[in-house]
Each structure stands twice: as C-alpha cells, then as structure tokens.
Image (cartoon, rainbow, N blue to C red; front, side):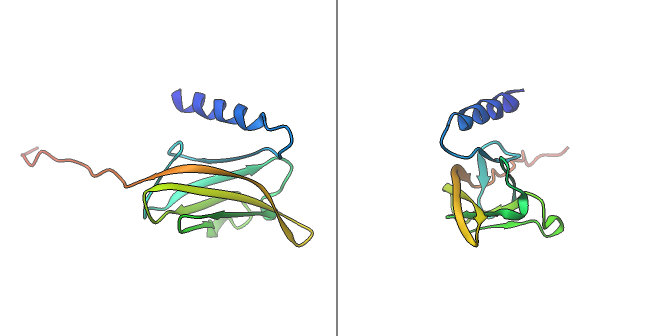
Length: 119
C-alpha cells in the first residue's frame, strides 16, 4: 500500500510540470537500483510509442529487453553505488528531443545473514 501511495504521489508531482511532456520511469524496487545487478525498469511517455524512445544513464548501461524489442521495458545495470540519472529522449525528425530525467539511488545488494547454526 505504501508503495502504491509513493507511486501515486510521484506521478502527481511529475504531472505538475505544465510546460514539459509527462513521463514516468519506474522500477519494481521503488526508487532504488542495485549496483552490478540487472534492474528491470519501465518507461512511459505520454503520447509517444515505445519504438520512439531512447533511454540513457550516466551510471554504466541501460538497454531494452531483447524479448520485448518494442516494449517500454529496460534493464538498468548500474556500476557503482550513489546516484544514477536516467534520461529519456524521444526521436523526432531524426533528432533526439529530451523528455526528462529522473534520479535513482544505487546501493549494493544487501547480503543475507545466517546464524551459522542448525536448522
């Protein structure tokens, strides 16, 4: 429920940008990406098909899922902990027009702890 509320609040805040085109970058882990792990990310831009989107990041790579070439699903693979900026562009007359960018926290994947005893 908390996750849905956060997504709803985020979506409302992004729609308040009157002069900008509305877009949303979301992942299953709220706004956290894990370093050196494949993180599924979805991108939606109002009025733009998935084939017209180009998504880039400043923290290693982001690529479209091979099985879903024409979907808006991507795999983000950040290299280092900190902040990853994901920038969304749309193709318009053979040029890229920036739609917007979002920041995600990047953390190491937490290690599981065992007690070392018997089951």
